[in-house]
Amino acid sequence: MTNFVNMIDSVGGYLFSHSFLLGAVNTLKLTMVAQLTAVVLGFVIAIAKTSRWKIIQSLAGTYIWIFRGIPVLVQLIFVYNALPEFGIRLSSFQSAFVALALNEAAYMAEIIRTGLTSVGKGQHRAAHALGMSNWQIMRHVILPQALRVIVPPTANQVIGMLKTTAMASAVGYTDLLLTAQQVASANFNYVDTLIAVVIYYLMFTGILTLVQSYLERRMDISRRGPGARKSKSSIILKRWVSKIM
Image 1 (cartoon, one colour):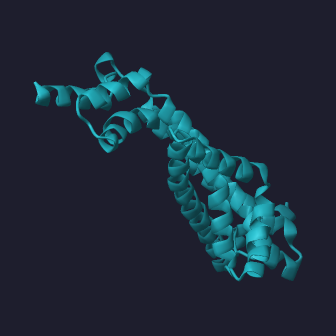
Image 2 (tube, helix red, strand yellow):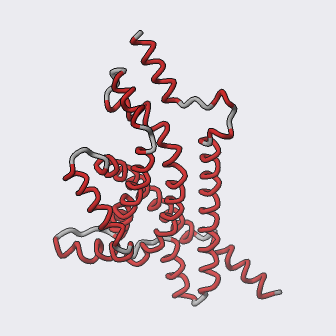
């Protein structure tokens, strides 16, 4: 019993120590920055994948094939250790950010492409017939409906990204895992330090899961009343019709 109490005190001390708090902040920072960048890049690649130009489709498909086919750890080590051979030197954070964002963009491109293509082509033609530009169609017609398909898997990708950032410790980025390894190498208390890391990750993933559940409920039309089944895009189209009339 005494050993158990001592372990709780030890784990609690690690949880609220400056080094572990800094490691937690670094983990969240890398997760958010890499994921947001991946969403933006993924959107561009998804648009390219659905392009009418075959060469653009091929380039987008090649990008997805390469970055989905190479393990993330290999990409991390390549960016950190191999790029200096070409005169490109990046810090541990920059290397982790570049590798994780480029890798995740390949997965996000497929998720976003699936969402965009889930909107019927008839709505594209109707919007064009009403005189809407491509940007207006994307903003008012396609995206409001595509987000219902895109958001749930994207939330899963954020959780996956959070856990994948642990690989950044391999290139010297001071995240939670590297912090635990450094502390444990000094006092050989691997059990308590790793338990503290596990608690942080479970807390973060739990919060992200709650946010994901909330967003899915908000976007689930079947949970709403019959009057709420009209999508925002249908309302926009009706407004455009009224302007023309």
